[in-house]
Length: 162
Image 1: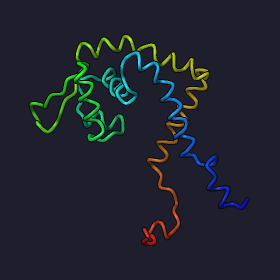
Image 2 (image 1 turned 30 degrees about the vertical axis):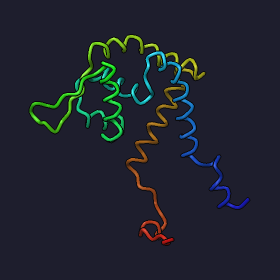
Image 3 (image 1 turned 45 degrees about the vertical axis):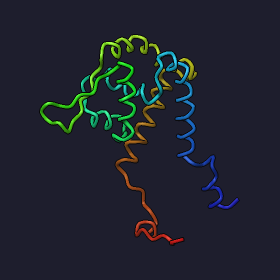
């Protein structure tokens, strides 16, 4: 097999490995989150609010790396369930402040077992979990900071038009 073929094999793609790992982890969460009647993205929103109540939609979006078009429907569903409230900032009407309601705060007590259950189901030791998380976090930071050296044709934006 030549180098080009080897480079393009699915098993050699970091993006696919990360994608498959993300799907596997999300599937491990599903039965645990079903007990809370939350989807995985809703759970992420709740995690952010349990850590820092009273955030703007933009602040939540930055923490979760989601745009407001993706985030707003999630927030509306959680509001409809009585877990959080959305209100305009009195000082700046452009901002929407998200706050936990009592039901959202109660849900935290039921969710506290999820990280340990997930770790147990993963089969990883605490040390291996921390090592993997650190490696992935490092990869994310590096990819945000670095621009890969691209071939001149790609840098110039030259593409063949179809």
